[in-house]
Every structure is written in C-alpha cells, then in structure tokens.
Length: 418
Image (cartoon, rainbow, N blue to C red; front, side, top):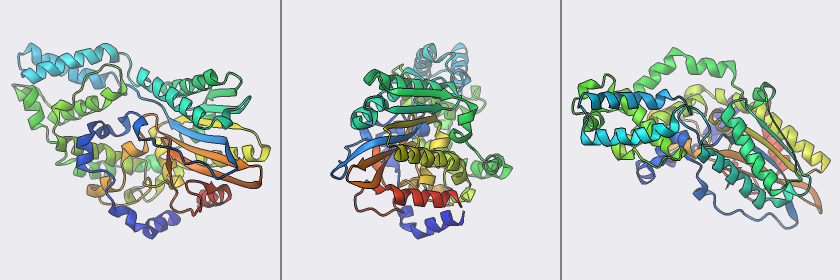
C-alpha cells in the first residue's frame, strides 16, 4: 500500500488534466453509459512497428465479455409497466406515448435475455480476435499453443467461444484449449475479503448518497412523459432506469434511442454517479486506500508465470482470459497503465482523473504482446488497452511502445510482494 501512495505523490501532475468533460459526453452521449459503452473500435489507431529483427511470439490477454443486455429483465419491465399504466390512465404525454412504443420494440428483443451476451457482443469478440490474428500473424502460425480460460458466467464463456471460434476459422491447425471453472475463477475474478467488506460498509452508502444529491433531478423528465407526474412514486428511480435503458441500446440490435429524453447536463451528472461507484469500488480512489490493487494480484501472477513459460520453451501462442469489468479495472491499475490508477479523494473531481468507459467498455481488453529476435536474448513487450498502444509511465524505455521484459517483470514482481 505504501508504494501505491508514493506513486501518487510522485506523479501529481496526472491529476491536473481532465479525462472527461461535459462537452465530450454531449458529443458522444453513448459514453455516458460507462461500462455499458460498446467496444470503441474507432479509437484503436495504428500499431508502431517493432525494432528491427523483432517479431511477436506470444500474447497475454485479459478481456471483458462483450456487449450484453441489462442484467435483469426487470430493468426493462419496471419502466414498461409504469408507462403502460400511464397509458391506461390516459396520463402520458405525446413523448410518453412515443417512449412506450419504442420500449415495446426493445422488449420484443430483450425479454428473457437479462444479463445475456447479445449478438452485438458476439461480433465484438469476433472482431477483436480477427484483428489480433491479422495484426500478429506470427503468434498464431501453424500449431501455435492457445489456451483460453473464462469465469463460469455464461456471457463470459460465450465471449471466449466467439473469440476462439474466430481464431480457429482463421487457422484450423491451432492447438487451442478452452475451459471455464471455479479453478480459474480464483484468479480471473478475485476479490479480497477486505475489498468486499469495504464496498458493503454502511459509510460507503452514506458517502454515495451525499454525492448523489443534486445529480438526480427528475422533475423535468417525469413531466415530459406524464401529464400527471403523481403517477410516478419514485421519480429518481425512473430517471435512473431510463438512463440505463438509453445507455444499453448500443449493446443490442433493436435500433431505437432514448437519449432524446435527456439534456446534456443530465447525462453528464448521471454518468458521474456510475463513474463514482466504479472508481471507488474497483479502481484507485483515495477513499479505498489502495485496497483494489490486491484484487488483481492473482491474475498478474498468472500473467507473469505464463509469459515466463513461453519465453523459456520458445513456443508461440497466446493465453486468453475472459472475465468482467470488475477484473479488468484493477488489473489496469496494478499494471499502472496510463490514466487508470491516479488517486484522489474529492468525488466532485473523480471525472477529471478516471473514466469508466475508457478503462472497461464492453469487450474491453488488456493485451501484453511479446517480441523476440534471433540476434539477442532480450524480450520486448508492449501494452495494448482495447487494442490501442499505451504506456506504463513508471517504466523507462528507449523504444516506446516497446519495453524490456526484464524491467517490466522486475517492476511487477516488486508490486506483487507489497
């Protein structure tokens, strides 16, 4: 813990640059969905060629499942039932009627699908697999060894299958194994007792409620939908439900939007509520005292061990891991990927240093790509966050985005011992 706090004070300038602004959310309202933001393919960018003589031989991957439906059917039906009641009582405005009609279309697709991987999610994973294969074909040459592991949650298992099937289509000769078990859950979805206790402590709820005050202002929205607002017993809950529906539409196939219900400032404020929860519960908010680093240590140990095995044997291949937003977020901060681990305590400023949709969108992933040369024993590695090159500011390199694996390994082993 002491090391993590030291790193924060060593790099205070990181807190001075706003990560997300109201203007950014207004330009792309889908980002207000936070961890429901569909995979940002358009942000990937180009890859930097490796130093002369180096070629890729191994990829270590941790990915989140792809786009999904809202976690429960009731997340749709609560709003649907309320709007239907409004229609029966002739208490809907024209906008309310239009919103009900759109939601009925959504319900035709979403009923019985709560928490399921969607067709959009399948396509996301297939796309990531194909781009990874085509970007680093040397890794998947011939009978390369590919090992895939998933948590036991069905949407993660199906995400693993979508990824692996695409690889096998591109190279049927791959020696590819896949599995999902509590055995792998122990490092793929690890949460310490201390982290769990922190999240459930009564004071956390009080702190959040205090922040929430002023962020949820539902009167305008309710009045735009209901000619008799008294029909809505909990206006704040309705606003949050509609906000969740609006954000999740990008994750399913039905092409309707609910963003027309919200003003730009409302979207930004409601997004801050989501961002607050993830930053405090899974990332490096100063409010949690560095607890969440511990959650990623088992998977980082697995990453180091697997990499060393491929380096030692000289094999080619990949280790593929499929989990959740609550796993990719702590791994990103333990790896000290740029813009994922800054620590501050003021909730009003959380959005200036950390953004959930930038760390863990749907199908979000972290890849460590390893390179070797026949002319030297030095192994290089580069870091990709959602397939985009990123840096580890604490590590020095003369060949960015490529780092000497010995330096990387030494740094991470030191963190694992803290």
